[in-house]
Image 1 (cartoon, rainbow, N blue to C red):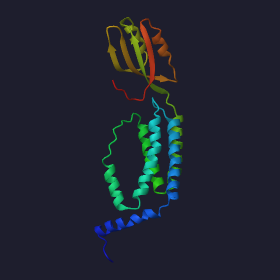
Image 2 (image 1 turned 90 degrees about the horizontal axis):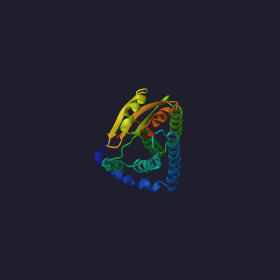
Image 3 (image 1 turned 135 degrees about the vertical axis):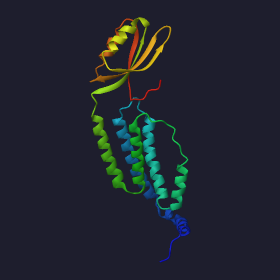
Image 4 (image 1 turned 60 degrees about the vertical axis):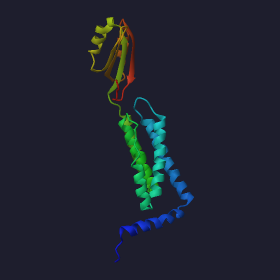
Amino acid sequence: MAEITFNDLIKKSFLKLDVFAKISVFDVFLVMLLTLIVGMFIFYVYKKTFRGVVYSYTFNASLVLMCLITALIIMTISSNVILSLGMVGALSIVRFRTALKDPMDIVFMFWAIAAGIASGAGIFPISIVGSLLVGAVLFCFSKIKPQDEVFLLIIHYDESANDEVKRILNKISYALKAKTVTSESTELTVEIKIRDNNTAIVNDISAITGVKDAVLVGYNGEYAA
C-alpha cells in the first residue's frame, strides 16, 4: 500500500477545488433558507425570554446574522483542507471587544454558532430539533420567577432627611453601591431585594420631608460607579 505524504494531501486538497462547481445554487439557497428559519426562531426566543435591564434589538439581530454567516463558513471549508486552514488563520485575528452584561447572551451566541455549524454541514435534524429543545428549555426557565428580585434604588435628598432615609433602609436588606454628596443634596444608590413586586419602600422614602425623588431601576448584577 502506497504511503500518503503530507504533500500528497495538500495536492489533493487543491485538486478538490472543483467540488464547489458541483454545489448548485439551489442547494446553497435551501441551506441558507433553513438556517434563516432557525435564526429567526433564536431571535424570537431571545426576545420573549429576555430578562435583562435593556433589550438590544441590534444584538438580537446579530444572532440571526451570526447563524447565517457560520453556515456560509462551514459550507465553504467543509470540502477542502486548505480553505479550512486558511479560515482558521483568518478567524484567529478577530477580536471581540463588546462586553456582554448578561451571561445568557453568551448562551444565545453559542446557540447561534452551533445551529449555523449544523445547518452549514447539512445536518438539519440536529439544527432544527436541537434548537426546538433549547428554545423549550429557555421558555421553561423564563416562566420561573425568583421570589426576590434585585433592583437599584436611587435617592436624592437633603442633608436634613439623612437620618430618616437610613432608618427606613435599615428595615430591609440593602448594599451600598454609590454615594455622591454635594453642597446642595446627596445622591444615594443602593441595591435592594424586592419580593412579589412590593415597591412600598419607594413610596415610604418619597414621603420623607427633604427627599427630592426616589427611583427604582431594574438591576442585572453589573454596576459601574
